Length: 447
Ligand code: NDP
Image (cartoon, rainbow, N blue to C red; front, side, top):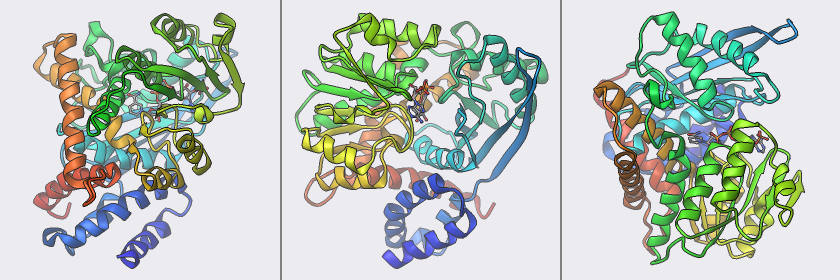
């Protein structure tokens, strides 16, 4: 089996030599899915995984815009339309200076499996730009978003490709992007998700990724007759996913003690309660400040410059910032400090060595493609509401989100439960996602 996986990865590496994040994401899937393919007659000899690692389409385009000083800036825009076997391409847009083809392809690839897990009819895609929104005025953000969408609008549509937010793309950016799409195409359709409530958005969409990550942690704990109540939780990031993971974990009786951004992390031993979180939301979403300002407001807390929160003692860790933010050493530290639940809010935040350590110690470890699928699932619910031209209540959407997260958890158990009872959520998520997409691809023939 090992030689089959090596042979497959060799082929993928030749074609994607300069794409380390993409290769990392493919390797993880190959290790779990290739043995399954070999055991199932219907997939044999169909080269399905080889077809799945090749995007259906990659778009790269120039994004010129004018900054406040009058200078013309040129950024690069991307959209990876990875797989549409089970529905229109669906996945976020990331605006961050590190964005490149490798990062977007890894995200698009993971998205295919994640979207399949939600049971909703969504294919996988991802896009973005190397544009850095930090420090830009609202006018600059608007001009950039408008220029980006002036090109992207030719390639997307409510039944073709429906982007959403990701790092650096929140409610403000979705608004500017939607405005330009509507102008260029002269149609008011559910082409983006994460929209404002008065123009097609869904209740709970902003909360969904963070809430879903916590619901998933809760489901994992239930398999051991345990709950989140009274647990100490470390969260990284302080953006959309981190904020709502913090909110829901606190509501369920846990104590969240850390948040971070790319400058370092804050540790608040007393817990980041509702009032403190409201301060963080105002700081990050409105004032667009830095997390170290937390300790000016709450001097009992400490700020650790340039560090990640994984050295802080906790039972539950929720990485909610970015890819590869938990390395092998961090994982060992977490385990030594008694952490036994890791629910990923970010995409691929744990390096392979970290995953190996978590699984070696048989803790409850959920990969992002399962535990953070609540965001895209609720985007799917936003699309349904747009098509039906109705709005569900907050409770209705939250109930659907809870059910989807529970169903994803059940799918992971179906394909990931080992003989000794240990649930390998990586294997479970990869195979469950693969089966749904692969069956659709088989039915549709070689296209
Ligand atoms: P935001 O832009 O709202 O927040 C990102 C947070 O992560 C910020 O605190 C940011 O700090 C920090 N961060 C970003 N890059 C780095 C880095 N290189 N090193 C350290 N910290 C970093 O993004 P989201 O909360 O939406 O996304 C967070 C993660 O969740 C991403 O992996 C994303 O792909 C994933 N995700 C998001 C979904 C969504 O619905 N939004 C859905 C599913 C997954 P700073 O401000 O300093 O950059």
